[in-house]
Image (cartoon, rainbow, N blue to C red; front, side, top):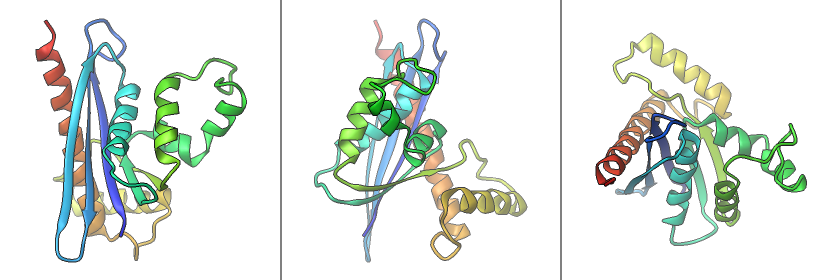
Length: 190
């Protein structure tokens, strides 16, 4: 039994004054007879897209009730996937939270929080292509699918093209949640 987490972050006016960001996540557990899902989202002013991407994953893990779970995290954030896939955080910690250029790691507060949340689980981070049209041609779906298999390390036996389409639909769904979070943050600002 594997928990799947789908996350996304969004930011309008990224890195400008008066910007608003949002994050969204769906936690999904497929059981034999039914599917359990939890949908969460939120937003805040004066943020960045990367902070919202990280916040989406953090909030999803914060919503978990038990440790030691097998989890797949699906995100369109290369920033997050590459950090875990290439284990950037190991050198960051070893170098006093400095990156390869010797500069302070951006979003250190969020990275530290995320690392503490994932350490008690068996987690695989999977990169998905963001903003894919669900109305793509079968040829385009096939092209995206083959690239996904190559980058994720999954085989066709593990993830069918129908599974891939469902993953893509979930990415569109969490993107909409992130935009909703950003919009609500904007309307709540006085």
